[in-house]
Length: 279
Image (cartoon, rainbow, N blue to C red; front, side):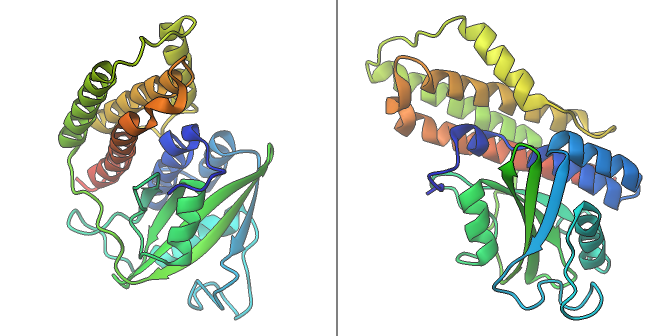
């Protein structure tokens, strides 16, 4: 289950989606560090602090200098990502250097079950996975908004094979999203639920879609990935507008598979965009 403090919107969209792509573009030499800092501040917030898993002696395995040295800021986060991915294999058959981890009700993150990183992503809804040279090690940076201007990132080192994520192309993920939308609409109609009433529903969906889509993606993201994320934005907006209607949260059991399809579409789009950089 998702942590009670995680809102529906955080389950359906997180700025971590966009931040993962900006970070990947930087790792592949397509952005300067200054551009990356600007992007993270625009996407996530103006101030950042980096912590490490309090249960781990050294989650960086000695790769960030002397024992006991702990990074504390945004530049340190980028340095940590650079160091742990330095010897990670790069190729279409390999896992991307960074990826998007999302979690929701009945939908665990692609991390070793029970690991501190998996628990943190489940509680917050999203994190950035970072590859390691060791295929049995995955790092994850998980953000929490402490207030309107400060984002706290916590770095976790996870050992073991994670829950396998669905291996889908953007076309498959898009069809899954369409099918889930059609099934949800049919179930809502069959349930006898009164028609959804919402003030200017098209305007509400459009406004939420715009909010989900901001503040943008790095230049050169594949068209298929961008379109898939945009479709996920629209469906996520429909879910939120539906839940704020007269029917309210009573439709949750019918919308749960649709929410899972939205998360699958987002993780697939990020994965596809990262792999397209290698073609």
